[in-house]
Length: 265
Figure 1 (cartoon, helix red, strand yellow):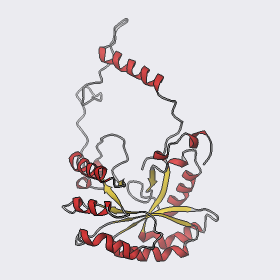
Figure 2 (cartoon, rainbow, N blue to C red):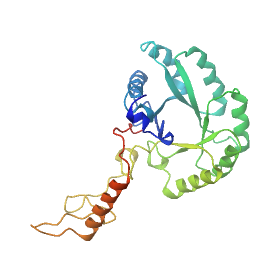
Figure 3 (cartoon, helix red, strand yellow):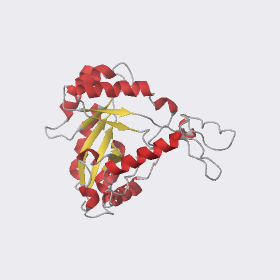
Figure 4 (cartoon, helix red, strand yellow):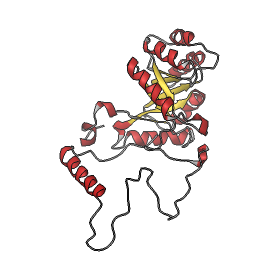
């Protein structure tokens, strides 16, 4: 990618959002997901887009799909059910000439002990393996597993949502996990539950929508947003004046942001 947008993107934001279009809520068929990903990679926001995330189960379908896109190169991250399945995924790669494996995302069976995770992965991986993100279980294995991963070359992956309400960790649980990886300086990624930038309710995941206010207008939980004053010559409330002043200072001090936004995962 070239141009002013690419030049203005700091390294921290490069590849910020992986493309998980085949997973809920998008749930696109593989052919549509690949075509859409190739369009994303050619768009002005391409520098923000990470690899296409695919499950190990769909890899056998890739050759037929990529045959419809001759010359296209596809960077993928593959989700793997368990460390024991890693070798089988790697064995399929030689037949995928148009594919570059950017990462593996490996889940852990409930019966797998913390002490066995890294040896099982290392036994299946070649010396020049891509990054491996180990999905951290939400049970008492988490603290010990993060310490083990920090002492290895592997990384952590946190699940922050899903298709049911119980898959969403609360603030305390997620904050404790992030505090530990920060202390350990352990790289990590987060998956699911990140489709909105702020807290939200979604009936499809088991969260009922909040009751509508009596006035029929939306309310702000903090009470910091109030209706504008009415009447000619009415003075704005003090909070609005402070907010406007803050925004004005922010505009003067902050550099202009490049246009365009990456797709939300």
